[in-house]
Image 1: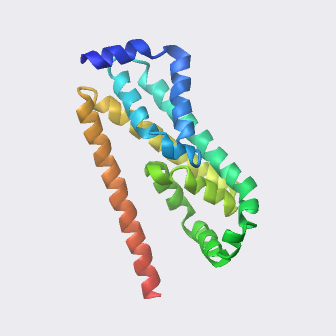
Image 2: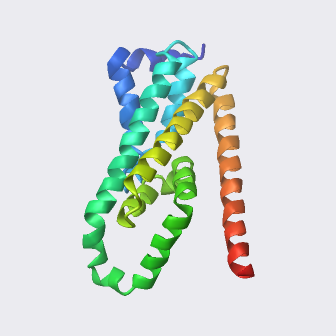
Length: 200
């Protein structure tokens, strides 16, 4: 085992406190603005990597990552619903009512896809649930979709670290590959949407 891994395992807390820290990382990454400063996905992959070396149980790690991600997304959605009305009254947004109406129409038609890509693409992770709340996306649809996305994310990111347990470099490579696949799929979806609008 590499020396830095052993040191990190010794420094980090054990048991429930460690798992709650993992949930907190997943939670904070889903909050608007805070999420931009929190390298949550990398830390969750690292937690999965450490699990492969005996630090916590991978199933517990997946569960707490999922719970943290779901609660964070839901809080972001709730904040959008509560604060969105006030933001819309600002002079800057009042001048852009047409754009806001377009965004609301987009969420009605493509809300599920938006939430999926937001969960797996870091920079927009905390923003899209906030905008969904602001656009008054149906709460039951949001919760159902977000829970599914959180479960997939909660399995994928600790899982990547765990599968790459032989070396941190391998775990990083696996996460980069997943990110590229998601990004390419996202770009393909945008292109398909643009093409569809052009042909109408």
